[in-house]
Length: 198
Length: 198
DNA sequence: TACAAGTGTTAGTGCTTGCTCACATTGTAG
DNA sequence: CTACAATGTGAGCAAGCACTAACACTTGTA
Image 1 (cartoon, rainbow over the protein chains, first blue to last red):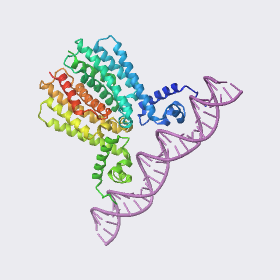
Image 2: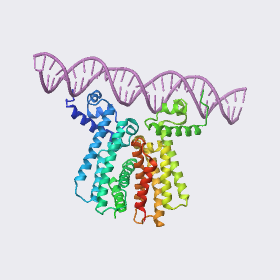
Image 3: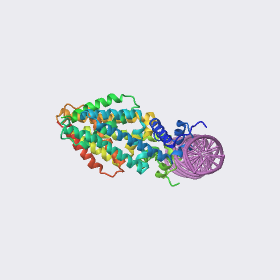
Image 4: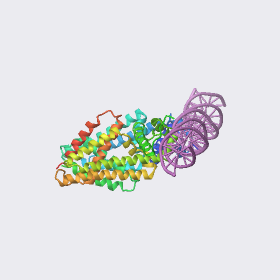
């Protein structure tokens, strides 16, 4: 009787947070009911009081990811900084997020999402789409204000921008996190901003 | 006694090919000794005659990936086309490769590589590095010949270029392969080439 | 106070996993 | 021809997996 009783909403949030951390450390494969329960100091069976199964936990994580992305979008759209400054801030907050919650990109790339549950895959595709839209908006604003080249396609440029970040994260992960992500991103940003500046 | 005896070199090649196909269909998680042996029409135990274990099979796949990349590099360096044409050809051959052997990108992104065996991770990081170097070379040639802007950083631009492709593949996978990869890539290429053209 | 609903645990279940063992068959060198 | 190494098989093992049943405690409420 070590575990104090808590509202299921609270427990669900705790479980999701622990699951993201665990995925960050050990991957989606490493997210087992035994490890998750152990990490939380509760029994495996108790997980099933709050979630119908592992799939439901993954769904909840994807919803959490969506919430993070949406929050970021609304935060930056309210901002009154220059478009290129906004873009840099999105970049930096993205990198910060990835570093402290590496479980998120890991789930995004995982086979469990790409090959497993269909709903999971579609939900995530939608989230990424809306993330691209956020970048597009900033780019369009920059084009309108004359800080970005008028001949860029905002959609393709947004996709290229995000791809640049993703690939940096991939290389960083493959390197065993040996190089400085911040420095790498700073270099990439310097080059990218030169490409799209008027 | 359905299985005819073959040289272990031949069997290894067969196993690696079947494993890549299987990963393409079912992911690295779907690559189980049972499925792989079943696909090849042989017993599980026979796999262990030719490979010491699953890790060894994954290593052989990574070596195969390295061979593919190296071949591509040497093929394009021998080519006498214009730099921008070369870059487009690399892009197209990359996409073609991904489409017919989707097991390769799946392994590159897999947790088994990123979190599992260290040697695997380092080998793959090296391969990607040399792939980046190939792109860099083409970009540098283009800058020298005056077809690409002289103010680009070839290294960062190469990384951005590859990231753009990777991200397109990710979105394609997340979409359930519903959109046309060729059209998407064509759009991205048109925008990218505009960004780096003089 | 009674009691139903909600939250917790222990101790399992059946299934899949990578892998091994003992044994059969085949190819080939002396 | 014979002996031996290489290549093949079926049977099965220990560990890990997601998940469940049966039961215990707590809390809100009629």
